[in-house]
Amino acid sequence: MQKVNRLQPFFENLVFERDDNHMIINFGPQHPSSHGQLRLILELDGEKVAKAVPDIGYLHRGMEKMAENMIYNEFLPTTDRMDYIASTSNNYGFALAVERLLDLDVPRRAKVIRMMLLELSRITSHLFWLATHALDVGAMTIFLYCFREREFAMDLFEDYCGARLTHSAVRIGGVPLDLPKGWLENLAKFLDKLPNDIADYEGLLDQNRIWKMRLEDVGIITPKMAQSWGCSGPMLRGSGIAWDLRKEEPYELYDEVEFDVPVSETCDSYGRYKLHMKELRESIKILQQLIPMYKETGPELMAHAPSYISAPKEQIMTQNYSLMQHFVLVTQGMRPPVGEVYVATESPKGELGFYINSQGDPYPYRLKLRAPSFWHTSILQELLVGTYLADVVTIIGNANIVFGEIDR
Image 1: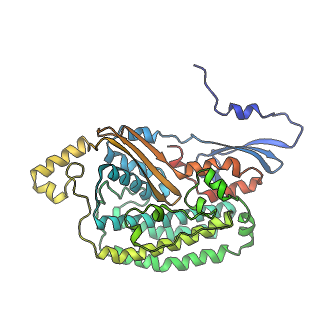
Image 2: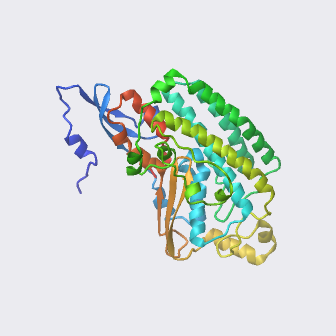
């Protein structure tokens, strides 16, 4: 069988011995600014990009096919390794899709805890984005400041579930643990301090002439272009389109908390930077509303559905039927009804969707992911044309792509 080169049409249009000023270079896949295993094949006219071809697949792990060979609970920790900067958002997206498939009603306390973890994940993701983006552009101090605050947020994750990066802190049907003693007080202290830290970031960057020269009018994505390429999250809102799934299709208790959906009308990299700063403040606002909501909830943490969800540990240790049921669910897995579901949530990077097709087996018949970074990598083939080579680094960092959810 003849091997097909997927880049052959691109190379056929190139002439390697040329009389003009064009040159073909590989940007990545090992370049530190490619944010993962991204290979960009760039045709340069002097220092300007004449053509760009994103080439992915260097990190492929067959995650979707793995899901079809694992019971539902067994696959959940694997989702940590998609957007590993905000792993709880992946855990939650998968758990919510299975819950919709099972028609489960999650206890209110579990919903509040989940929202706290989701918004903390959004904060850590945005801080990581600003740190690495600024480092790419040449700002070292902001990198250290952002990682300092991110450590405090990761301490909260560690206090809750014992992990700092890949949490697996969500379960199908709820959460495995209640908040430990003193956790809410530590969260409140972090939220009181963070607005001043954000103001420090803006004081360093907002009027910094190098930062503005590198970001203003660079990477302009018009509203039509953003919609045509399937952009979502900050990449879509950065083009002036106020679309946030937490508002448009609320899940958990997002319809009970007050927050705004920031947008940027400039459509450039600087506008998306300012948008991320506003989103950090909105996450703080949501978390501050969740603290009193948690205190008003009951003690239940997992949905009551014996066919799909194990009983509480106390019942497993004292009741024979609960022990047998738990043994069957762990060894053989739950059997959801026949059907299919697509559930999308607003991850820090955009719309994260899970499609599950169930044929009544312990394994998904088909599982497909809709990861925002994939679409934000696709747009590079149009977005990079006409920019300078130095701007390529800025645009890639500004797009906030993570290859764990692209090469899946």
